[in-house]
Image (cartoon, rainbow, N blue to C red; front, side, top):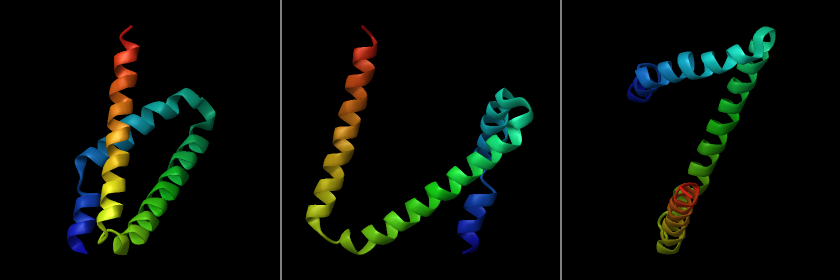
Length: 91
């Protein structure tokens, strides 16, 4: 538990992302930057809840070779799709 908390709270990359990326993006909203911050925080909560739920759901199913093959196929499709999109953007 302490290791997980240390990876979360002592991660300088996470702090830089929060302060620099979200902080600078909120400047575009002027007086409504607090609303942007709340929206970013809500999006983060939804994302990590969904990620935890997916990990819980997949946890027992990952013992199946079929699930691993499907997951690997999905990752391969995403990588090939990204490569194709980047290649198409060159022209």
